[in-house]
Length: 81
Image (tube, rainbow, N blue to C red; front, side, top):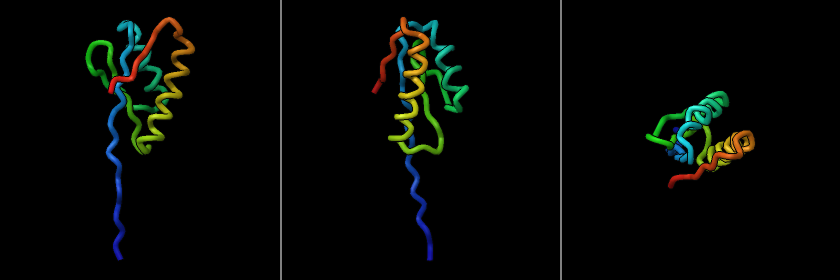
């Protein structure tokens, strides 16, 4: 009897910051919380977490992003789809 392993391919969530000088701080925030963060050029970053479903991953990223925004209210961010 065999078992099928189903894995979901996770896409990095793209986030754009309106002020490029905050990109490093936002990356550090996600890195401290064990997310994988990569530069997507300019004021954009890619964020993802291994081992999460796509829905769970998005909820976790959104929650951490809200925490960061509360500490940086002058900075706006957008999801890039």
